Structures are given as structure tokens and as C-alpha cells.
Length: 231
Image (cartoon, rainbow, N blue to C red; front, side, top):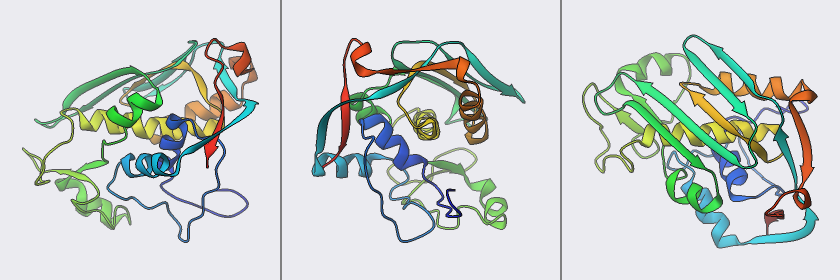
């Protein structure tokens, strides 16, 4: 929310922008939430690739973690430790025969994000649908924009895009929430069964404690990346 205007379900689009190196773009929408599309980020990736990216000479600024920061509770935890790159270690567990414990570790780059994270769709469980809809949530959910599991299997006719699609989508959401920091993050993020609320909590903790980070420019980094926007 900003200046009284609320926009929902921004995490997929922000995740794509963040991971594809887009930090200067106008977004126009005509409703209260960003379109869900197929429940993943791949359609946004394809649109960016079709439009092209314009590069500027101005050096990009990064937020580099200086000291470990952690939030935990209820058997869940998210920690960010110093690192010269943006790395993820995402660990999830769902008590379902097709999910269970899943772990994903990677250094996030535009190429790896586009092929290994962006196609992963949001997911849910059939036995939770009524309760969530009674709460006013996921009213537009269907097998066209989400993965749905019953007690033993996946209901989508084409099945899963990845064996660990649930973990990959959690990583997608996590990146989108971290984008709220406002600058590309340099650090190793370790998320253990964390969700949106915990992602937001660690972002708030970082933003409220300047001793946890420093702002550096690209010319202070080895790769010297430049600022980018959609052309």
C-alpha cells in the first residue's frame, strides 16, 4: 500500500523484475491485484524478453548484508548472512506423499531464475479450498492458474513442471517479498518453512536497523553490473 492505494498479489511480478535485473519500470494495472496468469512468473519473463531490456550507464546500487539477521517462530525461520552474491537456500515441508521435504539451493541469476524458478506455479490442497474461500481467498483459483493436490495425487492433467515445484514456487515468492527492500540484495538467504509473514518480518528488521547492511555501487563489485529497465 502507498498513499492509500492498495495493490495485492504483487510478489510474482516483483520476483520476476528483481531476478531479471529490472529496476526501473512503470507498471500500469486497472484493478486491485496483479493478474495471476498461469500462477507462475514465466509469462512475465517471456514478456520482458519480447520487449527487450535497455541498459543505462548509471551504476546500480546494492544492499549488502554486513551482519547475520534472523527471524524465527513456530518451527519456521529465515536467516540472511553476508555474501558477495544473491544466494538462496529454501527448505519446505508439506505432509503430502507428492511433496514432503524439498530443498533448493542456488545462486540467483537471470538465466537460472528464468529456467528453474519462474515456471513454478502457486499451489494448494483440495481439502483446504472451502476454508480459504470462506475467508475470501483464492476466489479465482483453478487448475489453469495453480497446482492442486488431493490427498494422494496432483489434480492438474499435465502434472507437475518440476518434481519439487512447491519448493521452487516458495523460492519465487520469497524473492518477490525480498524485492520490497528496494535494492538488489547481496547475501545468502536461508528460508526454512518460512512464508510471506516471516519474509516481511525480516525485510522490516533489515530496513529498521542500518547496522545490518551497507549500500554499495556496482563499481565496488567485481561484476560491475549496470542499471537496467524495460525498453
